Length: 271
Image (cartoon, rainbow, N blue to C red; front, side, top):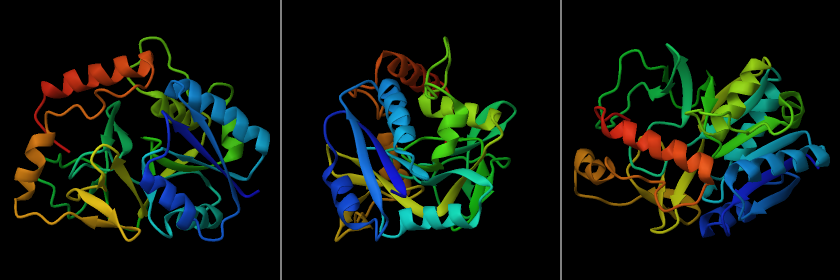
């Protein structure tokens, strides 16, 4: 088995995720394992143990509302094979909101800063010192969300038991904790900006990719929803919205997300 796909899930996969798993993995030999209904930290740690037991060369972490476009997972695997120094490679993905920056980050003065596309049209104030990329580049990073992340399974063993555990009093969620531990072990992390994986809002069926307006999955492809409003008008209702409200992540993560949302309300809006 070449690839183990690990999916932490609240209840079931989104229809779009099911479509992608059924149609968008090409000829990749794979096995899917899921942990359903458990807090996210517990689910990820259990999946890490089970992935190690299976011994596949690669492990792909995929959320239950992720939509990998045709060719994206194949591209991630090809990049990892071509660049053996990279031990963990994130797909090009973002949060469930329009015009959102990629959920891949570099450290700047001890702060995680999202990557910014060089010619982004996003209607937000973007700092001049933010790390830049062009679509198609493989960019080294310090951390990323685990919406869609490919890694060499051996990294799980090196990082150690319970690699997603939350330290007492931390402000960073479980995926960032893994990244911190991986970087501390000497691992090279990167994001492939040419491997898009959309983030689906299951309640509405809307799908999101970095710096794009809302879309939907149509004929097995991300398609922007036609709109007559400006980008600023589209983005406005989302600026105050807590996209994680009403979802169950487990007490530790929910406290981190609530604090982060409160902090954001006191700052100027950006991507």
